[in-house]
Amino acid sequence: MASLGLHALGACSNANQGLESGAGAAGRSSGNAGRSSGNAGHSSGNAGRDNPTAGAGAPDVASGAAGTGDAGEGGSGAEDASGGSTSTGGTSVAGHTAAGASVGGHTAAGASAGGASAGGASAGGASAGNASEGGSAAGGASAGGAGGAGAVASTAGSGGAPAAAGTGGQAGACAGVHGCPEPIVVGPSSKAWGIALDQSFVYWTTLELAGTVRRAPLDGGLVQTIASDETQPFDIAVADGIVFWCTAGTVSQVMKAPTAGGMKEILATGTGNGVGRVSSDGTQVYYLTNYNVVMSVPSAGGTPVSLSAGPTRSNITDLALSAGQLYWANSGVWNTAYTLKEPGTAGIARVSVTGTPKPSSLVTQLDYPQFSIAVDDAHVFWNDQKAIYRTGLLGGSYSPIASLIISPVSAVLPTIHASPIVDLVSDSSHLYFADSHNVYRVAVSGGTPELVSWGWSGIQQLAVNANAVYFTDGVAGVVKLAK
Image (tube, helix red, strand yellow):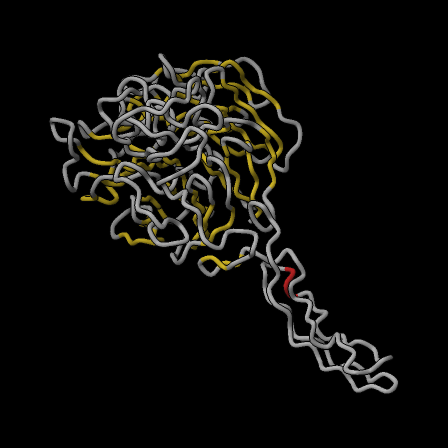
């Protein structure tokens, strides 16, 4: 959902409204309750991006009550209001405990000096002999690697034989609760949802009936409230000293305010199922509305214009901005009864931020469902239930780069309406993605995903810069994970 550029890192996850809903339900959370109160945990229910009969408002964050019925696309499947996942990639991943086990080839260990070799440290039978230097290498101090071989054998002591040189220690165990190194909570906050970065600060929203827009320094520090008493603010973006966000409720709007705080203004009001997936390049603000319409409005204020619309009865599930182009995933066209998606009608497309030339399809004839999208300087990524895929910026052929149904990512295939992951971002070297409880990465060229952080209550959105990955968790707040 987010591209690499700082202007685009706020490209959003419209979790409140579900871009194929009708009167009051949630996006990625699947339910009239959506990702409900308490910690914005995913709830089960009727809504989601692809439910044409459900509403378009925000989750019922006041009661947190789960809706009933089938989960909508982008929903989390059957999860409770406290964020405990039961079906959408939130299953426990073997090896991510503090035992430092290797997961998918990635050892989440190494904080301890596991490389200290016992070899050579023995006295070799000498009562006064010097212990060998062997095994003193702290080879396990990084990433759980085994220790290096010990140094040369010690000199024999009086009455004793030389001790044998060390042979290298074993990998140390990881002592981190959520990763090694342990991630840092830089913005403590309950119900944290949307996230965006600039060069100095991380910005986020809190999904509450009287929600807030906040910021904190990238390394942590004083938390500043930019706007308060906002109606369920969710997606957020930042560009050129202005922060933009979406609200939900009876009236869904795109808002703005100076990043340092000050007067807030309404930029646009949504139609149909509201607004979502806001991003900005500093000149214009881009967002989705009415299920499948890509809109632009001047960041200084003015008349919104449509850059792309349709096809009729289809829905766009995610939008990303990169290098003057807007990219999106469309999850296909409903039949006239709104009971099934027509085969081969989903796809990936883009349009210039000017609207000219007309929108172009990058990948066509995909099947429902399609979920998140991310863009870097060379690739477009998106996911369905089973895998993450990659194509070039101009489209054409595409290929899977990571499976989402093989451990460590997910041992259980979710319902067809639910994505195994909640968000993905790229730094051009790696693609980072998350389910409700864990963060993973995979090389942009493809491979086995690595588990890089685990054990969170309800991850919502990701952002990345040159040094770290940031994400929102519904209980902990804003988290920084060093690369």
